[in-house]
Image (cartoon, rainbow, N blue to C red; front, side, top):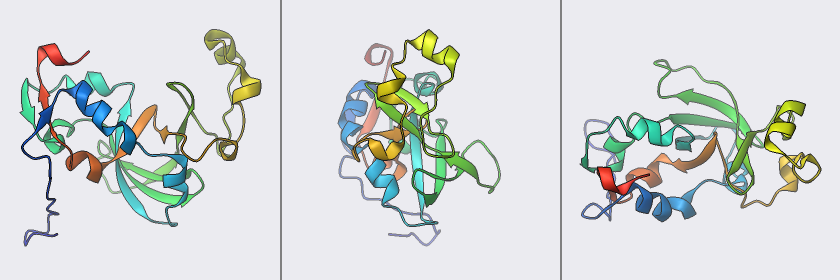
Length: 181
């Protein structure tokens, strides 16, 4: 529903509950985006996405201890407005860009356990020789096109992503020294 101001209003069924950041992440895990979600978008369809990337914990440290709505709590995290092109690629406008321009964007694939790597322009994971040695990567079982992975494989950017709408309609975050790692 839209308010007269033009802002979107969301009814949050969890508005009176709060979780620690770790509990919140576990609660939201089933809502992380997948290959199927992205490939079922129409060309030029736009979605807003919250990045749960490797800098996630660094960025939430900008918050003071307290209880926050998800919209307030994640305001300084990486958020993209994604416009779908095809397969697992499209265009992204980042919340830190300070403009309305979109740049080319390829999703990263959760290729094994909690390991993420960007797809190249051909939609394939392609590791360089140094990375293979440093991270002991078994490229024969990993270096393949995204179509060879299950549709429920997670995609994101350097980690998981959530639809912004799902994030802001979730429980509040109770952020204090003792409840995050």
